[in-house]
Image (tube, rainbow, N blue to C red; front, side):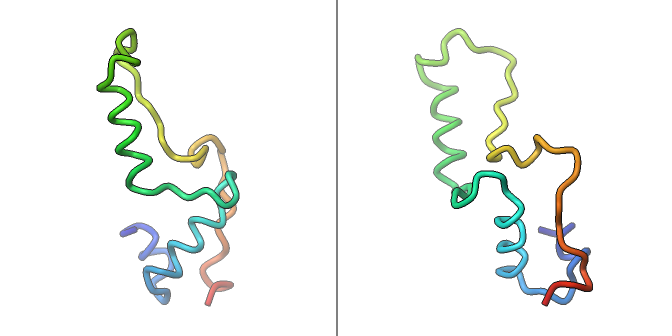
Length: 77
C-alpha cells in the first residue's frame, strides 16, 4: 500500500484497493486473510508432508504477468 500511495497520492486507501482488485485476472475473486491462512494451514498439514522448500504464491495470478495494466495516476479520481 505504501508504494501505491506514492503512485496515487490523491486517492484514499479504499480507492487504491479497488484499483488493485480490478487488475486481477481472477475476476470477482479477491484475496482475503483466510486465503493466506488456509495456504499456511495446508503447508503445515499432513497433506503437504512431501512438500519442502516451496514458495507457495497465494496471489490469484497477480505476479504471473510481466506488465500490469494499472491506470495512469492522472486518469484516476
